Length: 479
Image 1 (cartoon, rainbow, N blue to C red):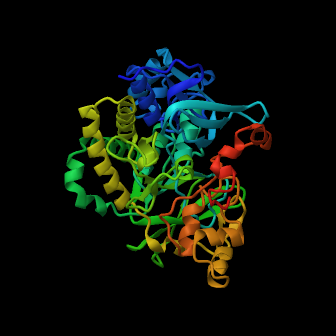
Image 2: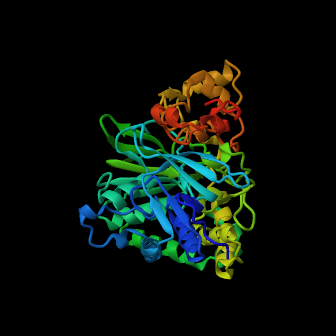
Image 3: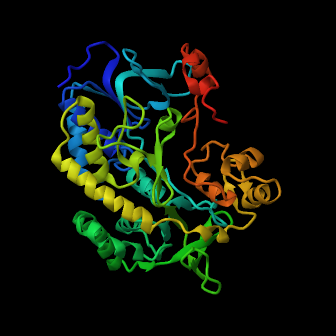
């Protein structure tokens, strides 16, 4: 077992992200004797998956809003009691500088808007557990108040104990829809329909994979039983193609889809609601690793993830990854990969249990991604006046004009011609849609010099600025 470094301010391992993968990695690394910095933008441990109410809300049973709360409670208790783990809350890492020989890794983070809110974390190795964000496919009316992401609806409930509405349609594609609808009805909401774009037939081809993941089947059955008790209707091979309302969504139009996700004329149905929770799966958050040149791989659904070896190592020496950054597969997989990465960093043999969990859950993740991959003709429900990039208010018509009349053949060129993807979210929300509408490649990772907005005063304060290739002009990024 390696000896933990004793240099002040220097860590053996810096873990970026305090969700399931990050928590498991920090806990395992500390139990192996490493000094760990657990760096996270959030105020409390848990990340997006284990998001929970603030203590002042006085929630008596926050565990009832979560699947797997006991695992989180154990990790939170052990990390809180460990003298080897420093939880650096409110630290949003905007750039990573790779270590070289005796020079440690340097993570540059912002803690707020002030010039003195910059922080630098030094470590011998880095583990990225930055999770994922939701993939959104635009449609007319998707910018109306009351239209939220499926994960956003869960976040409102878990952290604020509030609902986005009383009568909520849940739509999109992927298993997150069942979990979201189940949570909403348990909290007292009415869910008139779950609108799922796929037919679920893709799972039939993976009978062996399903048999190897009985816990996933049990979880899905539990959600299904709850929804059945509440009379929630599942509309398969269907999509919300328009949301209606002025000051707020008041209804949605649902249409049947063919195998390519093209709406079938004459199948439209209108459903009254005061909220819509919609999402089409998750996309790994990779900005820090991509800017370092880490290798990536496209999954069956087109989402790009980090390529890692059997020990969770990326192609960049000294950089590991775990959880959704390696491909979306759920909390159990993230927990296992966090433990495996910690053992690799510590130079210890991989635990057999976690190896088995990873193998089975990765197989299920691939099956899930293939079953819910967006069909190529979903763009048929996007009208020319539908805003695709909400930050810059770029409509689909402007993107189509850039392609048809100005010769744009990929998302980057469309961005330069229309500003689509240049707003506050830097293309995280509109990127997949812009890529599809441009007709260019969709399996290419975005390269962003800064992974989050950074005050100029903090950049000016950074004396080592010239050492960061992404800020010295050598990265080739256009942003």
